[in-house]
Image (cartoon, rainbow, N blue to C red; front, side, top):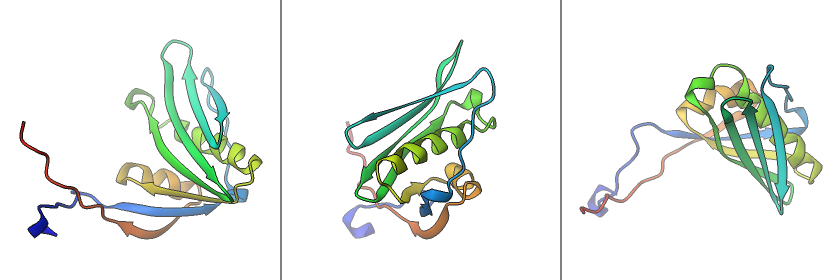
Length: 136
């Protein structure tokens, strides 16, 4: 791998799954509001604050009975308020309405605790080798 110029990230990621039927759904604390939309096979959820706009978001692509979560993020100024849980619950609910049964994601070190608290199981460590960044 190193002979090919590839490198591993400093921190591993985790392949996680869950049965969506047991996924918790939570309302955000006032004055936050969660809004979800569907476009084709993709479900998107946003948590908005009246003065700050979108402060948390994420998406899930529904493919058959699987829903793949991606780009779940919360603005640093609004973390530790349960907004990631609100986003994940809204995504799971709408994905199940489209036939999804299983949730799949790759979690960062930061996200792993959130997903574990929501019932997601660690299935494997994920190491993605990256090519070198070309000199400019």
